[in-house]
Length: 279
Length: 173
Image 1 (cartoon, each protein chain N blue to C red):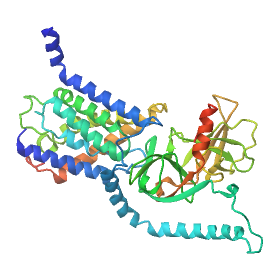
Image 2: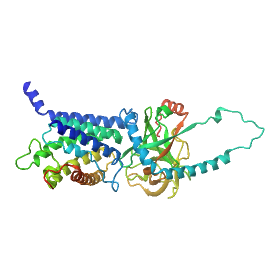
Image 3: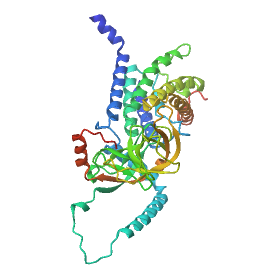
């Protein structure tokens, strides 16, 4: 018995090494499970505020660009509003549950972003205090950015579209064929569109937008433009479609968050009928 | 390890950690050459430091960096691996006569050629484990290898520059 203990004692450094490595692997696995609540991340108060101070300084240099983007977007919104506004007349429209807004929008600033790894995340400066909930969609004026994973009191973390584990339900705008957009981990300006059958007449230059089938994004937010179409070698039934992302992830500064107010209803319906919905 | 060197190393860890988090976090030359300058603080612990404190220190330093990178566990995993390899590698490349108790494995004490042969393989092992874990499941071994090679070269280059500029000189290189 003493021999065994002595033997183990002589191996103590190695045993500590194994123990620490197992802890690290457990943390990695725990943190990457989509439903797992991450308890240690950049949304905690101290780390979030350190990252915020850093981005305060860095953002100062891109203020002019941010302003320009805002002005452009305001202009297009004004144009859209013009078409919607009705001339006041005597006919009263009764408020009805049909006219309830299904989506609610919020704004936030990105305080930390990464795009060089295969699992990229963004930290946003709004948290549960401001009504941010896990599962909200994140986009900016250019297109889809990601989806909120966890929210603390003052900060929240979103999974970037540049994350190999992220699927976004999407469709080709011109013919309405739907598939999923998934990043292949290769380069931050391109992603793959999956599950498009060989019979589909897709053209280089077609726009890809969100389908609105999932409960996260409303229909019609830009994702990208088809830049290359090949037939797949491993599975000839599907096309291999490469899309150029419309969002420039290296410059994401301000984002909008969208919440589907009927998400819970949809989600419980999905669970009841045992359908797994992608995001 | 005496009190003075303890203070020095706490200072080193804080400075390199801050540089890593605030300046080098989003830096990647040509998209493949990353810089992990905080490893220099692990590499420059005195050669006499026992294995277990070194492992534990590296694990928590890696974890701290992870929290800022949102890659929970990956830096900790790779940094612990580096700390585990360090005593063995020091034994392999020990100069004739071995090390003094007070030897610090830095350029100012050991010279530039020795330092490269000491740090490059260790940092390469770190990078390889780091990128393999990061790309786990995507089956891109060659990309990981490529990134590890250039990242470790870049990190060693920066480590040499930092030491030549800021570390105390003793032998006048």
